[in-house]
Length: 263
Image (cartoon, rainbow, N blue to C red; front, side):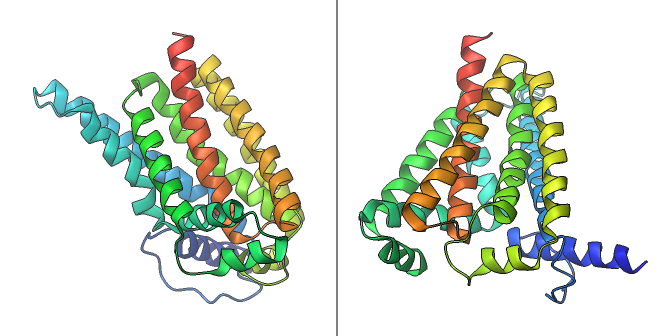
């Protein structure tokens, strides 16, 4: 009974931290935070369901003779993850782009991550990211929707895995707090199970396009580790957000490109 309560508290913390989903308040005690990362990918499941819902609504409206331009739906699908998450991961992406573009020493890069102001490179990176995402969304086909939807879970599973396995750039911050309080062995094993299941599902439903998306996610994860250690001495919450956004874009682009090649 007590274990179930702890799991429920961890679930609520994951929802309140990584999404705008309405959940009851929870005390952020060390015990309650042990399994938060285990529920992090569940936020991706919610996004994936909304994603599929928008696509199904598009097809239903078309069957009723109601048509809108593909760009209209592409724009909705582009901003949907940001609406669900509140932009927490995009914030990390923008801060990291600013820090990487500064070409400063490691300590200065870490200071830039904490700066609340958005620099020119953050704004440019955001524009490029959204344009690429929206453009790719216009090329989606129905058979690719499951791959992209599962990608929201895979990106979060990999991000959660990095929190409990990669070195931390500093001993403070949200990422370090979640890493310190997590039951690391349980979280690692849970993420491993998630990732195996997701990889199999993506390949089964997407075939070669799904395989290409899985390979892309793995490659981006490897780059994330190398880049973080080289430029920052480890990861932070902002870097984890950067990875999640880049991973999702990589999965989307791989699925679309693969869908065009392997039709």
